[in-house]
Length: 205
Image (cartoon, helix red, strand yellow):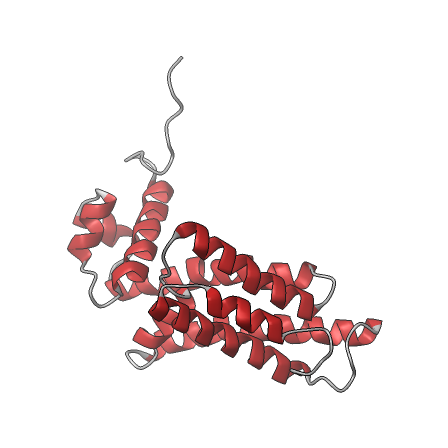
């Protein structure tokens, strides 16, 4: 029986080609940076022609924005927003995310850093559209945590004295900084240390 065709590698599958370009760009931008990645690098890695690339993404900037809006935003939602929303409490969710990411990095054996953080460092001052796209993701991330704290307060799980927005900013900033430190050290231990700070006593809020 013939093997099913992979929709991402079919040359007559425009959406598959577009997703493959996003796959490659996402990987390259994280591994070597947006500015250090050329369109030639992307075409070679994706095995596509210049015409195919420009059909979907007329400019490198268009591709960069698509990676931010589609892939990086989805990664933050999957790694942070949905787990925190589904946790018994915001504090528990934050701790579980820190621990889960530390586990993943230790299995992986290397640390590239937070995709959002990496691109924010590189692109926030380069272009206002990049900055706005990255800022929206940070804002959505913080809003999800703050909303969870408010829900916890309504249900009696969280102390009313905790400021939801301040707690959310602390969680996001702590994770961003911890990932930068883990990337520099090539070790995830700092994530576990930070996780311990988000305990249920409310001392960090």
